[in-house]
Image 1 (tube, rainbow, N blue to C red):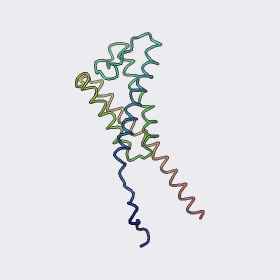
Image 2 (image 1 turned 180 degrees about the vertical axis):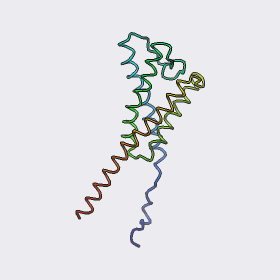
Image 3 (image 1 turned 120 degrees about the vertical axis):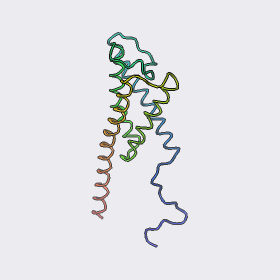
Image 4 (image 1 turned 90 degrees about the vertical axis):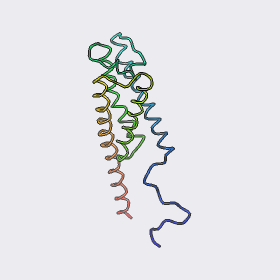
Length: 161
């Protein structure tokens, strides 16, 4: 039978391997907090403000009433750029970007809730869904461009044969 998979080779799964997905989520969560730390430090140090690791997880740190709170909001916002790059490089498939971005920020929500409390500030509830949206749209654009380029290369190779 032409095109049928051999009995010893299982057909390719359209879904990613569960263990690989866990590793990818681990990389994304680690990347979220590392990039947030480096960006926050680069913003806080020049202004001479105090940086606390709790600003990653506490919704109280996100406020527009103080310099520290505004810098924390800026750090969380700017973290979307490295998260987009990390998500794109880690996944390489545009169909998975939303799922992994949402999962990463859902884990962030759980950590915020476990370590402090359920976030109550409007800044937190505006900032994080916007981050998921921005990271998803940008990483989908990047990965779909890579996918189209790979399809064009494969098509050209097939035509040249």
